[in-house]
Length: 66
Ligand SMILES: [Zn+2]
Image (cartoon, rainbow, N blue to C red; front, side, top):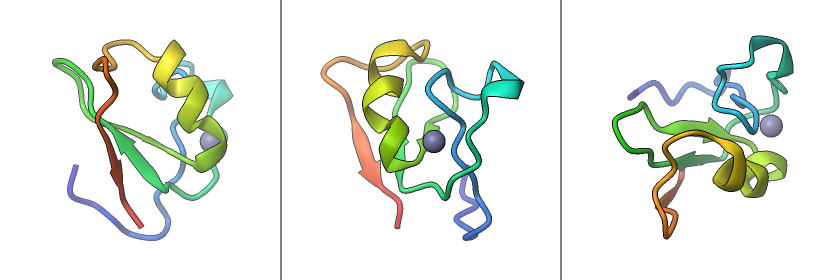
């Protein structure tokens, strides 16, 4: 997960595992997850993803991408 191209899009609050629910906004944050690829989300979905996505560490580990 080293691609930081500006075309990267939000994986939505469920970690991109519900394909139709992808939001498509630019990624601003990466949320670390246990045994899964980091979840890349926009600001709107940062909060919901912490609570809804599978494998999110607690307390959350969040990296500002751009
Ligand atoms: Zn989003």
